[in-house]
Image (cartoon, rainbow, N blue to C red; front, side, top):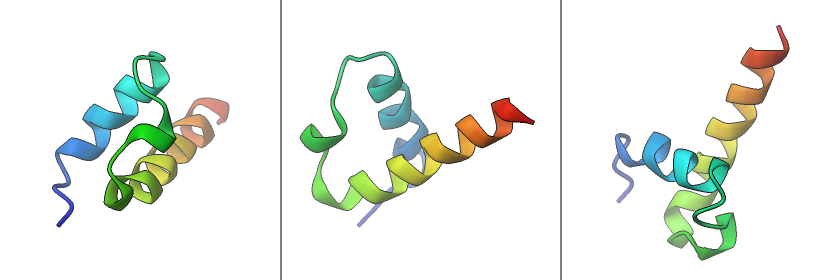
Amino acid sequence: MVYQYMVPVYGLLVKASAREIDSLPKQYQVPVAEYLAAEVEKEGK
């Protein structure tokens, strides 16, 4: 089960280089990657 409140938390950890996307629990890897991609797209606009 994926807790939605954890996606931005893991995203912040990955962005800060405290965690790598591969070290996250498997069920969070895709949602966190999508979250980070959306953040990059939002910054580019």
